[in-house]
Image (tube, rainbow, N blue to C red; front, side, top):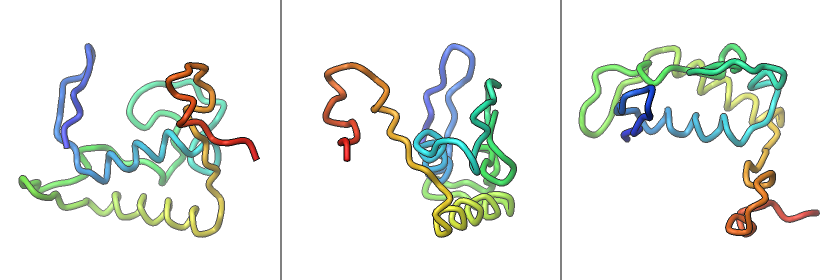
Length: 110
């Protein structure tokens, strides 16, 4: 996939696994994945050890796939273990956006 970048970063191709991790980082709130008190910025900022890999932690990329470096597999295993042990808390980012266009994306009250 291609991340378009912004005024600071250039666009780059990234593996789908990195995009999946990026989504997870935005819908899982707090520990054990990240430090809720952290205010740093940048790639992997505020992520706890073992829950983040860089987009360039893949090699030998072709048009169809990339090979993961060992660290990617460690991170994948850490996410999976946290999920299987019910340690992840889902957070719907649309719940805090008070814009009517997003009301259908919000979590229903229980």
